Image (cartoon, rainbow, N blue to C red; front, side, top):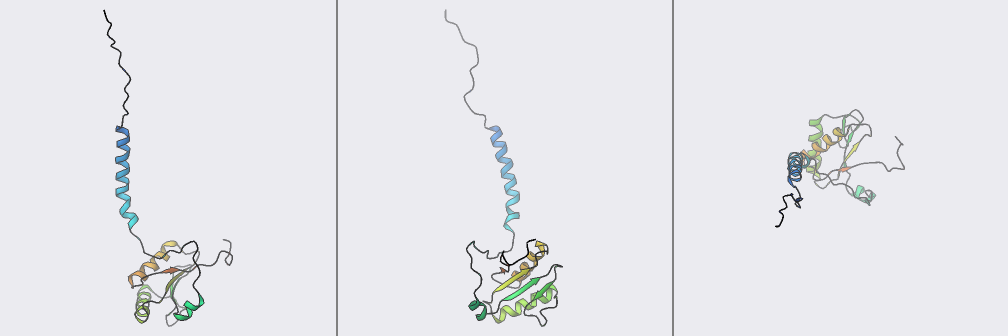
Length: 148
């Protein structure tokens, strides 16, 4: 008489339920964070091998420079007194006027090293709202600045 084996065999299938749970949690996280990452100011970021603006380009068209000092105050290079801080409405109006005269004029932001990053971004938002198509950032060369 043959014996019956009632012992259970080891299951050879992988349990994918925990994997599905993890994937659903990741999907929810990405669905929540993706819209937050899409918001921002569009700027032309320099490439690693970017060359500085040539003197010929600067001679052709004087750039419009918005400066943000360490206190977060704004200065406009084309204002009546470029050494005097301007408020946001004056800054926006000056930018609009300068870009109406020369739409292809380079627009640059010069932010102090100690100013909060958000203040420089706010200046870039004002530039974008005033119609600046591209915004560049002014920096010092690493060998010319302080070693903070």
